[in-house]
Image (cartoon, rainbow over all chains, first blue to last red; front, side, top):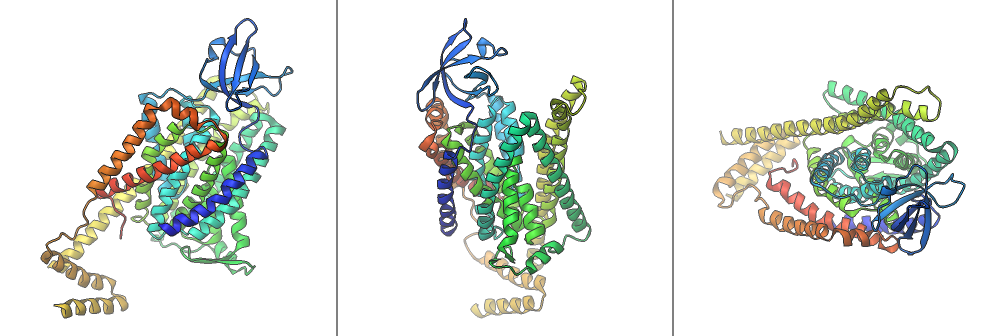
Length: 446
Length: 115
């Protein structure tokens, strides 16, 4: 425990410093976003007096023609997006209250999402993020706060999960830290690409790009993992190292690295691209693990159990680094992060201990199922974005609403089915284990 | 007495080395079962009821304190700059306290990793 903590702390320290310099360079939340309090509303001129958070600087902002006077909440912390394309400066595009009012149903929703997301995380190393951010947004949390709060809940969850799975002898700390350090660079590259796409093609273009990446990665990688798991299930579940990984391990290019828990010796030049891609994907679709885990299995040659456990270390380092960044701009709603943690810390430990009862290929099945259903959820959104970009003729509004519905419910289905497979496999494993223990006792007593 | 258990262990090792793992386990299992019968202390691991209650209480009171001071906490935690330490520190604190509670809770419920 001590050794693990010291290593993790050392990994975090340079990263937090890096985060400071990254923020200074202008990364993180958009510059067109203001945080502060509206102190006065001038109904006749349709302007508001706004006090910026931190600096207490007072500015006058104009409402755009679509905004309603009653949207201007006085004396509450709000997030304001400025209209970049407005001719006159300081025109608001939208205003959202930063801290939503908590009520019983929202509270229960957060606890349930936390529990299922945690279970999935503990079992396959990642998961939950793709549903937590949209779920929080649908509860009325502004997008940036949802992303920030999810980040802040992700790293403690990953830390607890990683610690548990390290205790079970499944997590390879060295591989995790090597991957994480390259993934952090990957995130920067991913953000740059995102910004470029946003600047070139606008919001709809960016959405289309994200969905397209989502679809391609999830369908191809998820499909392959599913095929592999199905083959393993038919062949009795004995996992072998992939041919690609064996070939990669033969490349003797210095520096060579040995990973004890993963039982792999491989050139650092092979782990770098896998780490970079994990980070880039994390910056694009918020779930780097969908590349990281299959990458560690099929390219580096770790087993599914070790790969999914090691992913938790990567998630911890990246989540902590991200939280520092979002914390610097003061966008974390700690209530949301801690409510998600209340159940996800139980879920993640349950998922982690579940891996000790199941065969390796079950992890692959859960991962592939989740990826493929999430792909559906993003896929059905593509027509909407294409229409926004005028690349497709408009379709009926109720068809679009139906597609939105399918998108949301497929996310729920992805989480639900993954949780179901994990619980069934775990209960089966536990029953078989206790039966074999009883049988041994029976033989020895009889 | 010592010789018997030593013999048993050695024969279990011999079987295990020969690839007869089940037989080896049976021999050791018989050993464990006999000791279990004689020993006054139960062989089954004691459930951590007390730890669950202690960590649960600390965690619950921390949650209570946070939500009764909601306005103050959200105000300070979102000021930005060096105050990133607050949300990140709180997340660390809760992960240790609440994580320990969750771990003990699962053990209390009899959910342990396969040995």
